[in-house]
Image (cartoon, each protein chain N blue to C red):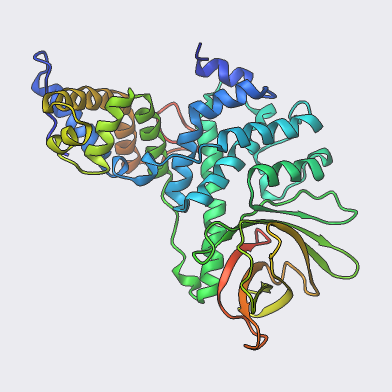
Length: 218
Length: 198
């Protein structure tokens, strides 16, 4: 940026040089798309609504709350539960809340996001480690119905890339909440993916990942 | 009437819809900018913006209203964005079997700079902000901006000049802090020197 032209006759060379020096130093930021991008227009309303929903269950923020609530440390049980989860589902449209039966450990909120194959898709997952297995409830948004002859399949993946199928679905009635089941521990298989599969092409992953996210902070 | 930052900081803990909205109007775009500069995905950045405000509100009982609200929100936003970035990067690395290829997120100095630049840009009048955006982001010459806006070239030059002087005044401390940071480690949570918060 070198074509700044002073219009003010009171400007002196020092002012101009100082202005140019500051702005040139910040040029990378001034050229950064992030500086000029706008968040979704409705997001402010969603945030206000989500906080209002939390305010219903907890009129004032708990004094013990701190920034570590998102990092898996203990927080008051009243911050858990359906209302908070509902607020997040309402406003975020994506994320993961981990809960365990009989255990008030706080949840970790993680994004399950659409890939380039399904950029408008997102999901909120609630992981419930039951006595029979791990139930993974997915609240799915924006995922297109699977075409005839195709279906979606959920997978958990470990660090070595081994996959465990957790069920199939088709989404042909629009946005939906589904429950998938895993017989393996989420801590060992922390990565959730959803692939688009084609009938009669075998039971392995197609590799066409439409959603993915991590279920742990490990 | 606009609420000043100190009053916003005092009223934000446990604040109602109007205060939450006022804080969002003041800092939401800057939070989004920090998030996008790290995660580089608009949907993911929107999620980070959402979670930043939710977490800030939940944690606000511990917020000292004598501190500045903006840097506190910046610190939450950066942490949320980096968490999100690392999770996505880790998944992609696992799927591509390239665990060694996970890139580091931008430095704290870099994200603080875009935060400050965004706040300063948002303080410009709309007509001046448009000229700055076209000059820097779209890399248009003054004559091209004049044609785009349908205004005389002299008008563009005077708007550009006013805008850049304003920006330089608002952002001089950022350049100073960056120079200091280049020669010394910025202490955590040290805003007194004008550096980025932890």
